[in-house]
Length: 386
Image (tube, rainbow, N blue to C red; front, side):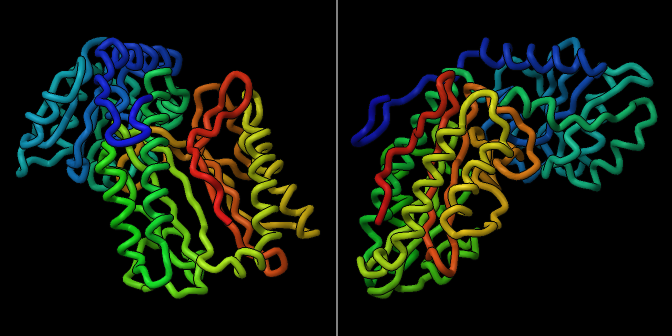
C-alpha cells in the first residue's frame, strides 16, 4: 500500500462480481435455513451486499434479497440518484416523504414471496424502527425469522480486497494518531488535539469515519465514550486518544495514552508493563481455532497474575471492518467471557489492553489486528507510548 507519506493512492471500487459472490453466499445460507427472502436493514450489511455508501440511513433503508431474482433496494426517493450511482446488481424502489416506509417495504416483499413463506430479518438492527417493524409483523402471509447472524457470519471473514482496505485504514489511523500525539502538549486544548487528528486523517486521504475520535484527559478515562472538550491540558496531566480512520467504509481503530510528565509515566510503569505483556499474550492467542472467550481469558490471566487477584473488565476487543454511524464496530461479537465465536483467518479485531488498578496504576492502549493462517498480524504501527 502506497501513501506512507502524503495522500494514499486512489483505490478502484470493488468489482461487481465481488458483490455477486457475496449475494450468492447469502442465498446459499438462506436456502439452508429455508428462507424465501431476507430483509436487510443494517447499513453495514446493505453496503456489504450492494455498495451503498451514504449518510442517508436516518431514513429507513432496506435491501430485500429474494432467494431467486434480483435484490431490491428500498430507499427514500430523494436518495435514488445516489443509490443508483453507487450500487451494483440491485433494483430500486423509492418512496416519498409522505409514504410510510413499511408500506414501501411491503410493496417489494409481497412480489417475490408467495403466501405463508418465511422471511428473514435483522431483529437487532438499529435501523429497523419499532413503528416499521410493528407494521411488517402484521403481514399475515409471512413467517418472520430473526437471523442477525446469517450475514455477520459471512461478513466477519474478509476477502483480500477487504483486507487491503483495512490495511489502508490502518495507515491512515497511524497518521492521525501521530498528529494527535504531536499536538498533545501542556497548554493544548482537547478540541485542538481532535482538530489535528481530523486534519491529518482527511489530508492523507481518509474518508468520513463512523465514530468521532475520543480525546480526554485521564480524569475522564473511565468515561469511555466521551469525546473532546475545551479543557486545556496541564503539565502533569495525561491524555488518552482513541480513533479510527476510514478507507471506503473499512476501519482500523487504535488508542494510545500519553503522560505529559515523565514522572507520572514512571509512577504507572507497572500498569504499562502489565498492559503490554497482556497485549502480547492476547495477540499470541489471536489465531484460527481459538474462541473469543479463550482470547479474553489469556489476556486477563496476565493482569490477574500481576495484581494477585481477579480483574474485572467487560472485554478486550471486538470485530471491526465495515462501519457506519454510530460506531466503527464491524459486528456485535467481542473478546469477552461467554463468547464462543471461533476465530478464522481474515477476521480483524480492535484489540485493547486496559489496566485500571489502584496498586498497579493506569495504562491503556489498543491496535487493530488481523487473524492470519499463522496467527496474528498487528496492522496499526504507532509506537507504544510511555
